[in-house]
Amino acid sequence: MLLAIVLPGAALAACSPDQQQVGKGFVVVQNSEPQSPLYTTDTNETGGGDILRMLYSGLVRYDTDGSIILDHAESIEPNNDSTTFHIKLKPGWKFHDGEAVTAQSYIDAWNYAAFGPNLQKQQSYFANIKGFDEVSGEKATSSEMSGLEKISDLEFTVNLTDPDSSFPLSLGYTAFMPLPKAAFGDKDAFGEHPIGNGPYKMADGKAWLHNNQLTLVRNDDFAGEHKARNNGLVYRFYSDMDTAYADLQAGRLDTLPRTVPPTAMASFETDFPDSSANVPTASSQYFAIPQYLPGFSGEEGRLRRQAISMAFDRDLITDKIFFRTRTPAREFTSLTLGDLDPNIPGQDVLKYNPDKARELWAKANEIAPFSGKFEIAYNADGGHQQWAEAVTNMIAETLDIKAHGKAYPTFKQLRDEITNKAATSGYRTGWAADFPSVANYLVPQFTSNGSSNDSGYASEEFDRLVREASAARNSDEAKPKFVKAQEVLMKDLPVIPLWYPNASVAWNPKLRNAVVQWDGVLDYPMIEKD
Image (cartoon, rainbow, N blue to C red; front, side):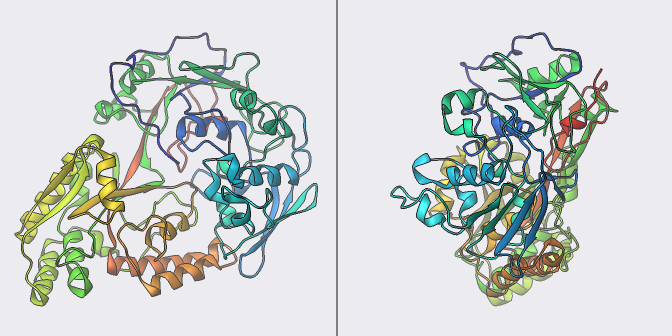
């Protein structure tokens, strides 16, 4: 899901939202104005997505560590190769307007998302369901995917085109939530005041005051186990993170999810000694070195990438530059994923070892001497200059070569070169999870036909292992295959892992039971507030 970014500008007021009266026991949360009406199938940014996660509950939810917990689903049973999933629902669940949540509620929502003429941003999440090709194009020949079959009000099956053992893990993402009949009527009205089935519901009246705040109240009729312990949530929309942090310090705000502003990174743990956290979240940062660059193909390139990976000190950089708000990488995904085994053979290649780096570089030079300079391209509008220069300075010192950062004015300019395979240097890149699964990192980025495989990496062994993991019956059976797949990546280093951006979160010390989840957001329903 795309992160909401607030850019400074004359049109943005650097002040607090109008301070509306907050009821007793309501938790006040910093957020950004949602980009579009609140539709689960059409919201792919965090401003709206965070709100929808509280309004809806789906087949599964995620525990604090990202592991899967059955929510509305009583059971999700795969067949032998994970191409068909038989789903049974718990009875008694209702939408906020009293309509029963049934198998048809899921089928209708997923078909609506996949149907091409509806132009829903979340459409691609349904691409592996049979019949997607017939419904997804501009000239769709059907409006219903053949892979969704209703058995009864509380049972349905999902038939996939390709095996995917991680499919159940994806089902807690907002795109897979059920929708009531009202969602397909007056869509403008529904998007303004959505009707969900989750632990919170929209407040009566004008709950969404645009560019100011949005109020949710506890749903006392919620049938799930994850019931709200507070009276509601007030999302306040800030255009300036420093202002939000000042409001947090003054007690006008209860939490900043995911991260404090850069100006507070060095001090937030001191400012909030008993109500802050600095823990890994579901994202990773890397830099890639295109294999078409001179000196970086074949065995020579493999040796050079390993040498470069060992030539800089991740621990030192995350300490001195990021004030410990980053965690040095141990592998290619994220430590917060529920189906991850982080003990990957060969991960010593991610540790600072200047002697080994020089040894590997010398071996590469025996194949063909290196000439020229090594660069890491970065977008200057994203705050990457400090670390890029620190990394390249250490590489230059360790390997006795010329190395430095290479600034591009904007993210778009850098990405245009990368996607056009026109990059002339190494470049920064990264990944944020849509749902807590190793497959969500490995498949799109590193398989031969991956949708986000910018480096052009291709390994038959890696592709085979990922296919075998995807065909496993469950995540426990898939884990050892994913470990072996990551072992291949450790040798080849299609990208060089840097660190996991932490959730650098602070909250009002008066809150009780405040716990940071796998994605860097507090578990809002569990929070208690007087």
